[in-house]
Amino acid sequence: MSDLPLPISSWRDRWSGSPDGVVVLDLGLQPAGDNFPRPEDPEPDARFPLRMVISTTSGLIQLEDDPTTPEEVRGIEPRAVLEQAEDAVTRAAAAGYLIAGTRVIDFPSPHGGSWNDLVTAHGLTVVEDGEAELVVDNFGVMHDADQRAGFAERVRHVAPDGILLMHFHDIAAVVRHGMWNALKNGHFGLYSAPALVSILDELGFVALEAWRFSLYNNGSVVMAFARKGGRWGSEQGASVTALVEEELTEGITDPAYVATLGQAVERTVRDIQGYLTQAKAQGLRIAGYAAASRTAALLCAADITTDKMVAIADGSPAKHGLTMPVNRIPIVSPDELVALRPDRVLLFVPDLLAEMRERLPEIEANGGRWVLIEPEPVEVEPLAQPEASLA
Image (tube, rainbow, N blue to C red; front, side, top):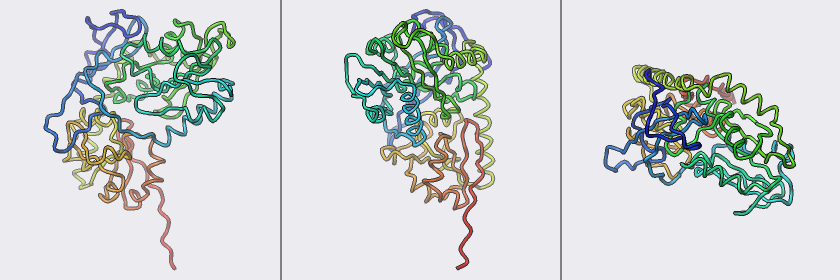
């Protein structure tokens, strides 16, 4: 990791086509993020190069390459994500961007998360093609290998006085908090506020407003864009300017700063290996929750196998009975997790904590503890248990 950033020769920026870029994170060989093998499937599981590049032309942070073939998506939306979607739509409505009787076109992520039901509750009509007064991209365009074509497809649907809402996982928060395992195959574009504003500016759009939410360590951002010179004018909003300046000050366009993610990988691997080694020495039974792509990347990098973790639970029934790639840790249901009576449960998606405590109170009632993986392990103080009745 210490040799990064590295120049590259055969790559081309997915936005500008320029060859000017450097590798800022190299995770080596990683399993495909959506591949969960059956226990009887032959080993070893396929692994593929996973490297992140920053364009010194556009500032876009992106995958260098992706040789994987997407598998069937089996995830479900956490409650925290659904609540944030409701909040975002409420804010957009208050800003005047949702107009009853107009049209909306949605570009959802392949992993789900459409806002159609929320915006139609405000009187908008969902259409599949043509122009719309509201176009929503909910983690969608990041999955387009050709970033220029992906953005062009979205803006061509925006009516002359329409609004484009872009919901994205801000790469600045990823770097700031060392969340390197957010990188995965299939996510071709990774946006900072300066890069996204610059891309849409080139396409004739101005950023009107930015809302930042607490998900992903304050890394979930929605920006509202409109065509320059139309109904909404051409002046960039103050909230957008503040976010852009904050990220530029941090250094999000500096390859050396972004490459500090490599140090985060080393720190995470050291800390989680140390935590699990100590837990095993204490005779603790360790399980996990959330069989997500970020979980696979972390377990693979830290070489965590079934000798230190008995199972990983997930809320998606389609994953039950399968295993995590490479290390083949079993994926179980939440009820099976409770039956295992683990002493510690590593929560690989920390935003799930409140939902999991409410859904699985037995974990702490049985003496167990939740451990947030952020991405280093942080034990959560257990909730106070109600005193037993004297009756």
